[in-house]
Amino acid sequence: MQSKSYYSKRITCAILSIFSWGLIYLICTRLLNDPDMITDSAAIIFRTIIIILAILGITTLLKAVDTRPIVEISEEGIKIQSFIFFNVFIKWDELEGVNQEKYTQLVVNPSMIGFSTNYMLRFHRRNGRSVAVNLSLLNTQNNDFFRTLNNFIKKYNKV
Image (cartoon, rainbow, N blue to C red; front, side):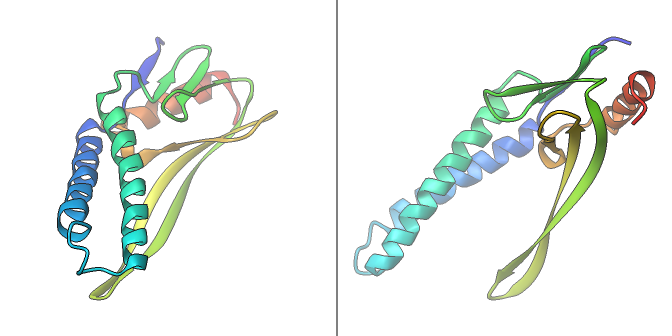
């Protein structure tokens, strides 16, 4: 077997980036531009939201244009891009376990209550911290990622 690479969902990342920059534009031009419309404490909250949206917009924009794979599965092990510039390499003999985790958060606004669910794939190592991959932003290529990972784990490790 040769190595396989899996990339981010570029369209989703681009949409999130555009949405973030659009909200920044609306907050700056519509809300913060009119000083009589909001109080000082609301202005501080909106500036904080702008900072958070700018970080989200930059991160998702970098993920959308980044040509490097998020996960690369090879004969030696699995290489995971944990953040924009940090890579973690796990050899197959270091891998102790893999499990899929589901995180559900309650989302509340005045008109409705909803839930936001995020799926993570966590790789546990024997002598180190575990590493998680966010499956929401990973292009798994119609479950080819899970089949390939399963084949390599069966071949090299008895997890």
